[in-house]
Image 1 (tube, one colour):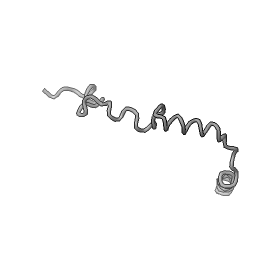
Image 2 (cartoon, rainbow, N blue to C red):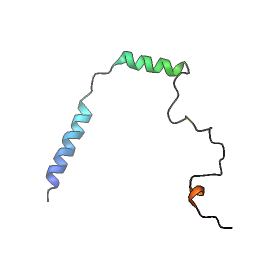
Image 3 (cartoon, rainbow, N blue to C red):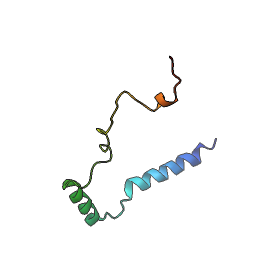
Image 4 (cartoon, helix red, strand yellow):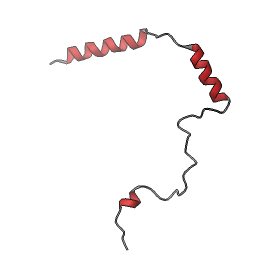
Amino acid sequence: MGRGRAKAKQTKVARRLKYYSPDTDLTALERELRSESNGHGAAPDTVGVDDAEDVGDDDYDTWAPDER
């Protein structure tokens, strides 16, 4: 019971996402793409990937008790 309201709301949201397209600021998009192609902007998922100094160390080692 009560599933009807939730489903109706989900349907309403889905329709809004499907059919509503907001105005796109093409000049801002063009600026962003130009800055990334010039090497000034880096993709967020690649930043710091090669910066790891010690691959074997992790944060758990600082909290784990020594087994000596």
